[in-house]
Amino acid sequence: MYIYNTLSRKKQEIKTINDGEVRMYSCGPTVYSYAHIGNFRTYIFMDLLRRVLVYEGYKIVGVMNITDVGHLLSDGDTGEDKMEKSAREQKKSPFEIAEFYSKAFFDDLKKLNIDLPELVVKATDHIDEMIEYVKTLVEKGYAYEIDDGIYFDIEKFGEYGRLSGLSLDDQIAGARVEVNSQKRHPADFALWKKAEKEHIMQWPSPWGQGYPGWHIECSAMSIKYLGEKFDIHTGGVDHIPVHHENEIAQNKAKTGKDVVNYWVHSEFLLVNGGKMSKKLKNNYTITDLEARGYTALDYRFFCLNAHYRKKLNFTFEGLDGAKTALSRLKKSVAEHKAADVCGDKEKIAARIAEFEEAVTDDLNIPLALGALFKLLKEKKSKDVYAAAVKMDSVFGLGLDKTDGAPSAETDAARSAADIPDKIKALSDLRLQAKRDKDFAKADEIRREIEALGFRIADTKDGASITRSV
Ligand code: AMP
Ligand code: ZN
Image (cartoon, rainbow, N blue to C red; front, side):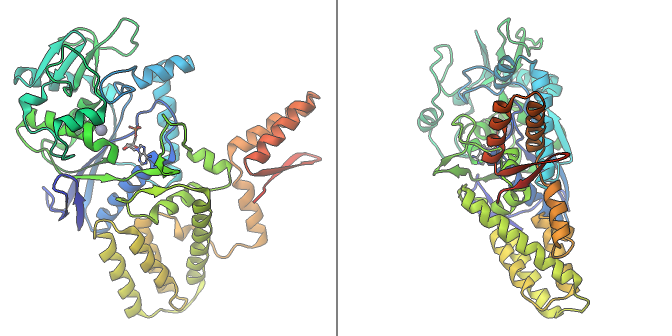
């Protein structure tokens, strides 16, 4: 299997450290808010990579972190901690915020058919490991203490910038690092921050009360579970210039080794040509898509149509196309399932070979989908169905879950089950407003439901909801 390694800037054959086993770390979410569909593009990519490796017969030891402390508003170690800010705004504790948004994240992963890595670990459960890590860096002379924390000395390290290929000056410009007169170099990054009294999440350390920097979290947790040499590290392309560059620097300083063999990054989901991000408020969540009548798998299919190293522009027209194509795909698979005849084994084997060649060539999923489409054009047969299900172990679209061309009755039942909880809750609120004779409020809620793509009709038992498209 070949994969593009950001570090070597080449497609490379994957040669694992242990025979038949891949040890892989994936940067997980910062759980201060709902993850958006841009974030999920990166996790869909992680899932596809895992599925192809399993298809190829590897056992996977996968680790994903949950960042529940230490990710500041700016990558340049300034600004409030995202968790503390969200907690303050929502009048909850950062721990409650983390629990709520972690659960929402896992719920969305499930809807997207993203299999969880074998180990999902929280930063706040690994503070001791992070302190030990920082202590070692201080002892080895790669870290120094100033008034607000412990910083990594990138000039002492000397190899900074290998992953991004950026010079130190470019890094500084890109990261908009703010000047801190005590830092030895403007791009030195925080390993440990000293906490102000009002900072809720703080732990005792050799340097007083404080909390870890975001980058040390991933290094400490990956090395704890995967060792000082492991195979693959994944994340979005935004992590290349700061977060992963910092991981490489502190790992090498601590262990004397290049800890990770393959650095693999997926490209952004864009909206109107710009990055989808919470900061820019141009993001949609899975619930937003559901409220407009799409399923999480429609979105998964939308992502599968672009190579992970290409930017992908999100539009609702594009998502409509994906929804229609996925439904046709499922119908076709169901027809093959229903056919009680054998297929042309040679032609089917040729399609599977095409599929395998595509997925093992730097995860060329769009090309692999092409092989599936060609396969489904063959004469209707159970063998084609079996081959499609085999391919779907990588695509993860639930193609075997289809139960035939839907009848009018199953369509109705399915659409009733398809009404998102948010719409049902709005409908209940509207009925309550009517019972309270607050008709202005009832009308306002009806308009909100309609704006989300649903129609509501009063019945003698309450209200019936249907999709307007
Ligand atoms: P965060 O929770 O902000 O740390 O982001 C979680 C993951 O989502 C990281 O791997 C980011 O690289 C990735 N990510 C953030 N925005 C986008 C986007 N617009 N498209 C694809 N991936 C993204
Ligand atoms: Zn990370």
